[in-house]
Image (cartoon, rainbow, N blue to C red):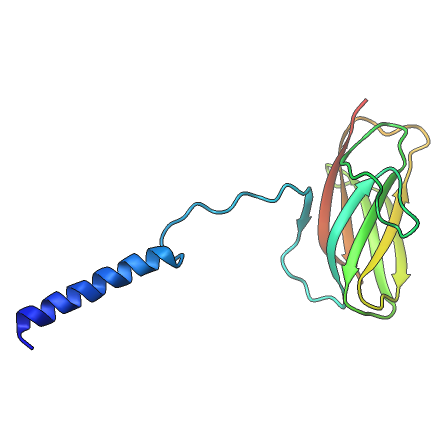
Length: 156
């Protein structure tokens, strides 16, 4: 093969590689939009179970799931969190830490669970004096390690 043909063949291969890299995601692309859920999961922490979703609402079904999802509450609402987990475990301490937006802990609740695989564990919080308007957070912990934070608001 002549030097000119080798140069042309090399250039063709290089052009093909550059074009293919654009199709396979190696080029600059716009990142996907952020999820619309309000839950923010922490960087992967090794825990015996996984918290896969936290749903908030004011009423729950008999199985613990929320009847109508919301992240906006009224001052006299009872706020219910349905924490969806997966993987089997024994003696797992699941903790709900209800906080104001500045991180002040309002209430902390813990339940010890023994999930066979997928499970829903519910937590409830009320404020007899009525919730002040503002932003709040629910931090979920597994055996003392924070794994997820969900934001919610109270409006009049």
